[in-house]
Image 1 (cartoon, rainbow, N blue to C red):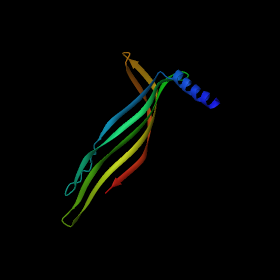
Image 2: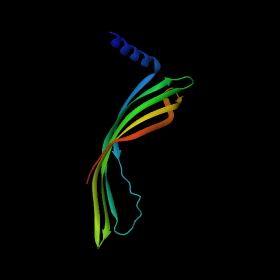
Image 3: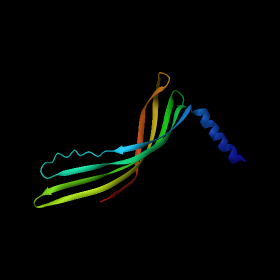
Image 4: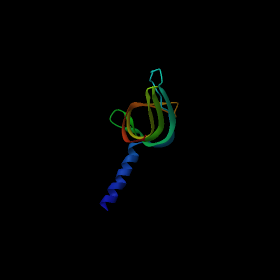
Length: 136
């Protein structure tokens, strides 16, 4: 009985703390770019990959003197690269398919509300690579 009451109290206090909870999801379209200025026989091509993103955010969490926004987000994306370098004496070919997953946690202590519906949050977000796989 005590455990059930404790869990109910946690949810009640979370409702009292925050004004809104955002749940978001979306589709990612990834593009690779090459900044190699090597001339000659260097050739590269990149195929865009698709991925997804989803997360949760809590708005207007009140502290002593400010309101904050907290967010946690998961991204998954990938793509394919093809690189060739060399000349008549030989060449090197690299073909790889890449998939990555990232987890991000954001804290936004500066919060502005404009025109009753537009919110601007400024803060910092920390992200960490969770998984990475490539074939090639």
